[in-house]
Image (cartoon, one colour):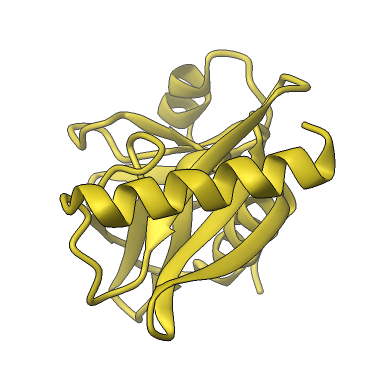
Length: 162
């Protein structure tokens, strides 16, 4: 693996924040910072804090980043083109995403399917962000499913004293 200098335009976009790893993305770059994933120029949102990213998968020419814009909201997927060597970036993204998870608990809401209740560290803060990620097959707009998930989350939080 060759070491490459961090492009000056990426340093400028990072605005003094520490760049952990980066990869080329078209005419821009995608970078892992201490508190977030900095997305290529022109992609919205411009950055994703680690606690919002549910998972990332890497292919030879792109990364699929699945994130949840708000607790209980429907996950969204960003497809980010990548080129060249991105293995270090992929490893750092995985480490940062997994490192943000404090608690992860699955509850059954309808037969064996249900939801994951997740508490994650908010980057740069001591607070936790709780989210509910419903399994495929659960209608996230069904008020009964939402009520069951809310009850399960309340029970979990009470049992943990948070």
